[in-house]
Amino acid sequence: MLILGIETSCDETGIALYDSERGLLAHALHTQIAMHQEYGGVVPELASRDHIRRVLPLVREVMGPAGAVLADLDAVAYTQGPGLAGALLVGTSVANALAFALGVPALGIHHLEGHLLSPLLASNPPAFPFVALLVSGGHTQLMRVAAVGEYELLGETVDDAAGEAFDKTANLLGLDYPGGPALAQLAGQGRVDRYKLPRPMLEQMHKTGNLDFSFSGLKTAVLLLVRKEAPDAVGRADVAASFQEAIVDVLVAKSLYALERTGLNQLVVAGGVGANRRLRDRLDRSAAAQGCTVFYPEFEFCTDNGAMIALAGALRLGARIMAAGQRPETSSAAKLAKAAAAQHYAFSVKPRWDLSATVL
Image (cartoon, rainbow, N blue to C red):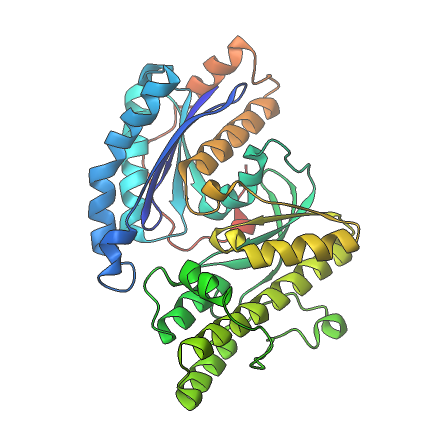
C-alpha cells in the first residue's frame, strides 16, 4: 500500500511517501525557522500562510523520485492534531481534498503517535511493547505502547514541556530562536556543577510512584539566577550546562523508573528534544546498566516530519485491513482501502487531543 503523509502542525511542512512493503520511498521538509526568527517564536498566522504555499510543491517533489503519481496512492494520512489550529487546517483540507478526488481514505493521525512510532523507520526498530518518552517543545509524556493504537499514559508535564523550558531559558540567556539547539550547543562549553538547580518532582518519585513532570519551577530558578548573577559569557555557558543537566537528570530518572514499573526493557525516545546528545548519552549508559535498550528515530525524523505521519497512516490502515480479515499485501487489500474511502469527507482538526484516547 502506498501512503502519502502530510504534516503541518506547527512551523514545518513535511511530506513523505511510504510503501508498506518497500518502506520510506521519499520525503521532503520545509522549515519556517528563518521566517519566525525575526519574532523570537512561531507566529501562527504566518505559519499557516506558509504551509499553503509549500504543501503542493512538496507533494510533487516527493512523487517524482519515487516514480509514483497521485493515482497510485492507496490513502492520504495527515496530522489532525494537536497543534496550531490554522496550520492543521491547511494539511487537513489538502489531504481530504486529495483523498476525495482519488477515492481513497483520508487518515487523521495524532501528531504524537507519529513521533512515538518514528523509530520504526530505523534499520533496527523496537518491537512492541515498549515505553515511549515523548519530549518536545509542546509535550513531555511517558507512554506504555502495547501496539499501534494501544497507548497508556504513565506521566506527563503539569506545566511547561521540556522543550518549552529549553526555549524559554535560551531566551533568558539571550540566545536566538529556536532556543533549544542553541542552548544545548552553549551547554557543551560549560560546567554542569557550577550552579545547583532544582530537579522538580524527582525527590519523591519512588515513594509516590508519580511519573509526572514539572519544569516551570526550574525555568524560574534560572530566571532568578540570571538576575542575581548577571553572568558573563563563561557564566552563561555554566548556567546553560547546569540547566540542561537538571532537565536530563529528570528525564533519565523518570524514564528508567517507567521501565522498572512496567517491567519492560525497551525505551523509545521521540520528539525534538530526543535529538539532544547529552540526553542520548545519559540514557544509553543508564539504560544499559539496567539491562534495557533505548531506540531513537534518525536525527532527521526527531523534529516534525511527514515520514512519521505516512508510517503511522500505513500502520493504522494495515491494522484496519487485518481486522477485516484481509492481508495488507494482497491485491484485495487495495480494493478494501478504496472501499474504506466511502467515508464522508467532512473533516475537523483537533488542536488539543489526548493520545491515549485515540483508537483504531
